[in-house]
Length: 208
Image 1: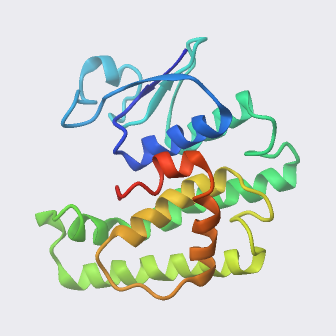
Image 2: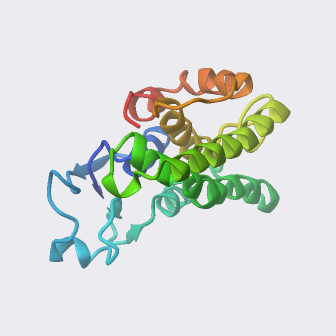
Image 3: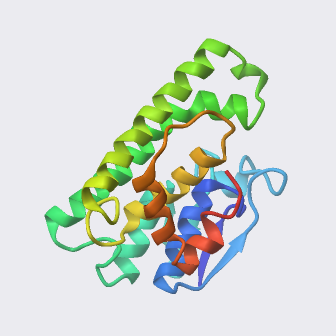
């Protein structure tokens, strides 16, 4: 059985949990990450030298870290091509939005999230908070326009891995106490995502 190492409050662990729900993958989850077992323990570092969750150990011994990579792997190994298309162009469009989420979008929110949600003393510069909020909203505006264009899902007409990773990001954005622009296309997209049991269980559950 697949082992999934990481606490279920982690946004990146929940990407994998939602993906497993979509694919019907059975797994055994282990609580790693404070206040549970520390990922700095040697047993965890032997699997992921970055000391970050999630990590998976598949039934054949395959070990992987980086949440978006894990989701791609699971969809590729256990899926039927719906979450991650086999056609090169269609797959690239899904992965484009996944890479954008992990790079551009995540980098925009870090300072504001650490200040407003985590109350980090190291992120108390008001000007940097406002800059981060502005950049976060700008990037969510990019997603809003994409969803308005497709009228359906992030990469086009069909639900995919891109919607899993971006759905969790949208939840974090909406749960952070700050001013946000109106996003009707994004709200309609979230309504579509809420029809999926995996989303209800792991994405829009009140945890940013």
